[in-house]
Image (tube, rainbow, N blue to C red; front, top):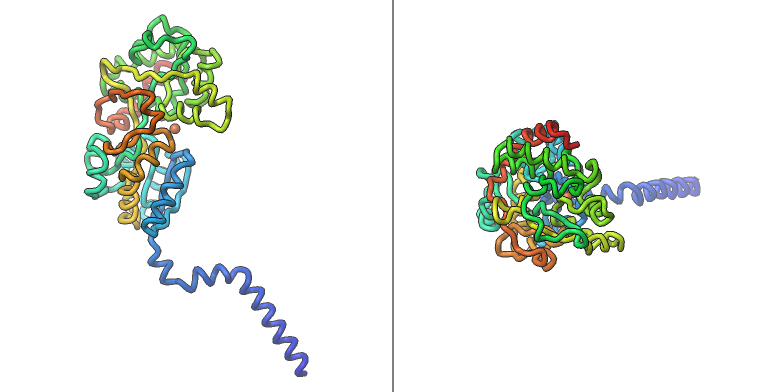
Length: 356
Ligand code: FE
């Protein structure tokens, strides 16, 4: 009997030991510091930034502040839809997107709230923030002409508008109009020159297409180097991505591309931003604000911008050597909100002129 009891005791102990060594090991850490769970500071981000480099900055922020950063990545439209559906129940505190048009849309839909921070106000110039601080830029990019160093003399380039001339017939490659970067580009022309002129421009580019739009910005430059066209309309950082690619073929493509900033004598080169907005129903707005302060700080800006070959928005931070090698440029001087406000009209114009 004593033996049987000992056996049973051992069996019970063994079972509970197995139990302890598996799931409860986790339970122990989540249960024991129950207080820690409720007091643990976090920021939950919805981000559409498709770049590998953001995580390193978030890690640095966590190390500095002890605030954990959780991130959900998806396409911006999906993220905004999710935010809308979740309403007050959302766990998201901060939305980060790589186009001001989306930030504008989030704001219009009432999904954002004012970010009150003297630090951010001093880190980011007014023209890179929403008038009511419902979003702020984190990085900037220019949409430039990437031309074939072999076949194009940059002296023959001048403006976006000039690309509609007969001399560029069959020479322009650019991605589809469903892409937000092109929509924001056209939205800027609507803001600067009016819808009629913007329509003429879009029709003129379609007329001079080297091929039907397909692929991303990098693919456009590959097409230029392959001789399908002479120049492409792309974002600056994609040139940097080619030059620093792990694929030697992409590096070669990058080396055969020249960067030209159009409209320097006129309206300036089109620029867009990556930016952040506090969500209206975020529970950790204070922590999210600290993260935005960090991301716009001098310390983080060069990393944040340069890691993806973007321009810093903090004026105290210099761009990377690569961006400096592209030269200085004059940017469009317009209210960035107009890129969002004119988005629907831009989409309509693209449809009208048959830009796929
Ligand atoms: Fe991009």
